[in-house]
Image (cartoon, rainbow, N blue to C red; front, top):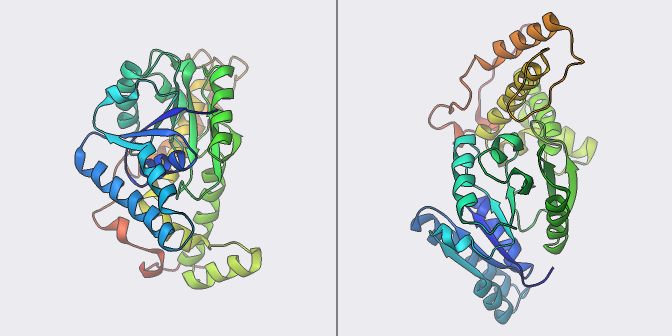
Length: 317
C-alpha cells in the first residue's frame, strides 16, 4: 500500500496524532479542521515533537523534514479529494460526527474508505448520515496515536467486506495491530476498562486511598497504571461518558428486541417474545440514564479534577 493519501478530519490531540502517525508511516496526509487556530496549534505540536526526536538523535533532520513535507493542513473539505482513506476524529458527539460525515460524503472520492475514530458510538448511527454506508466502519485509535499500537476495527451492519479488508490492510501499513471489535458500547477496550475504573472508584468511595488502589493493581497485577491514575490520565469527563454510552446502548438493544419493533437500519429480532421482561429492562436503563440527561456535560472544572483530590464519603457498612 504505497503512495496513498489519507485525510484526517479534526486536529485535536487525537486527530493531530493520527495525522502524525500516518505521515511517519509514509502516507501523504492532509489534516482538515473547521478553523485555522486549531490547525496552527496541531502543526506546531507535531513539528515540536519531531524536533525533539532530532535533538535526541532518534531521527535525522532530513527524516523530520520529509515527514513534515508529507503532512499538510487545511480548512477546505475539498482537500479530501484523492484520499483513499478519510479518518474522522472530531469530538465524541453523535451530532458532530454525523454532520462531519455528511460533509465527507459530499467531498470524498467515491471509492474512499470512510473511518470514524469514535471510542464507543454506534457505527450504524454515523454511517446513516452518508449515502454510502457500505464504505463506513470504525477504526478506533488509542492515545497517544503515534505511540499506541492498537486499533479496533468495528463493522457497521452495511459495511462491505471490501471496505473492511482495505481498512485492515491500511492498519498494517501504518504499523498498527488491528482487532475485530463488536459494534457495542465501548467496543472491546473501553468496555473492559469501564469495569476496571468503576471498581477503583468504588473502592475509594468505600475508604481506600487512590494511591493504595493504584499500587495494588500495579504491583499485584503488573498493570502499568492503576484505575485512578488511568482516570486522571484520560479525564473524568471521559469516564462519565463511558458510563452513559452502555446505558444508551442497552436501551436501544432492548427496544429493537421488542416483538414487532423495526429499528432504523437494524434487523428485527422476532425470536424475542418476553415483552414484559424487556420492558422491565428498559425501565432499569431509564432509571440510570435519567439521573443526567444523555450528552450533558459535567459542571465547569470537572475536567481538571482528579481522583486523588476528590472527597468521597464512605458508604455505610
